[in-house]
Length: 204
Image (cartoon, rainbow, N blue to C red):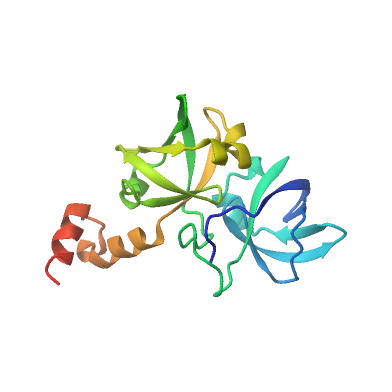
């Protein structure tokens, strides 16, 4: 499990076949789980200020692998004794989203991100979402997109400062939203709204 709070921006040294090597201040151990741009990966080698994680073919098919260059977000798996300051993140990327629009005002930036319609049901206004491993709050949701507000601190300290219109990003929707939806879906066909969930929960 992770929190969605980025430990540091690691430098990509190389990506060869299924192995991604990163230079970082963080020193892991063999077998450690570490989130790289939001994807939980396993450390297979380390030493001299760098470490290597392995990506399966399935991982590569689900991730925006074109972003595994220059710098990436990293976060080691949380310990039971850690404070949970973001939200509970599994490191299981659900879908790739695409940045549609970026609006800047005097104090913040609004990012509008498109996702396939079948995933929008797991994205809740004022709920949590993870974008490339960053824990964020959803401001509003449309039929196939949602809006996030990014404060200057987050812009300065994450890869959001480098994102442009058309950039693809790894998205993990809120774990509890997924669980609730599947628990209460009618006959397992997913034909349920959040108003239905509220009605069901009100009975107990």
